[in-house]
Image (cartoon, rainbow, N blue to C red; front, side, top):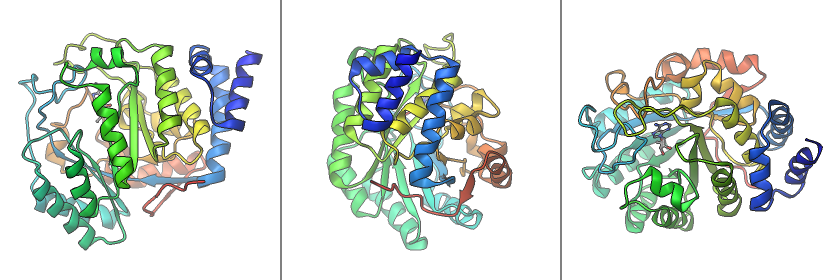
Length: 349
Ligand code: 5AD
């Protein structure tokens, strides 16, 4: 225990550990160790961001997806999923409403939908930027060509979220069909960084086949890639996927990993994700107390929210919803955090 704590102290000091040391830290999880990591992580977050919580309005623009990821309810093999695509007018109306509620970042997220062509998306992005020049636009639309990423950046997109899902090649192959590779995912992430986006990677916690060794690689990847953001959340099974009977990931382990990520990079934008809130009604507060500083309430039109079903029982009501912002402000206030009206850009050291 003593020696493991010293690894945390080392991380606080140097922001780097070896793969073996990360593996030991992950494998040595105990509630006490996590509490120690959380204390150090919250202190590190305070230095960069104070107690500010940044909010992002999440707009789920399409549930069509060409991919067949084994964990995801939107996989193309799921015939029972209801598919929808929002019109540009609807997306702009969501932003309008979000702006009034106090959002200064809009996240357009969707499956890999061939109908979301560059021309259409560029029009949507530039229309949002024209209507709300003080806002950031984040895209989360999966793997695209470098030319596409460049065109969207030139149209005004500020940030791009593309979770790497796992930094271990064999584990990646267990979670995805053979046409998807970690190698290509990493090429996309590097392209996005080179173009100039604030980039977010990320991974699920407790996905089938995950070990302390694969998680150590995830932590090392974040250390080396130096993304602006990292989204992590527990795996939650979806009934119409091959992983239907698998157990859900651990909220406690997710929070511990949030703390380690904060210590690797104190300026990281770290969301307490919807999956955390889905498995634990206090999941988001627990995430904040472990060192997170972002929440992404759902701004999608009410009638599509249940159709964007990545996993079973995905939360979209209460403080997960944009309408629940008052409740979110209250619950964050109770743990000493403050929801701010701000773009919430990364503050690099
Ligand atoms: N459980 C938890 N997270 C999931 N995602 C997809 N399916 C699941 C699931 N079953 C996450 C993936 C993806 C993000 C949009 O949602 O990490 O990148």
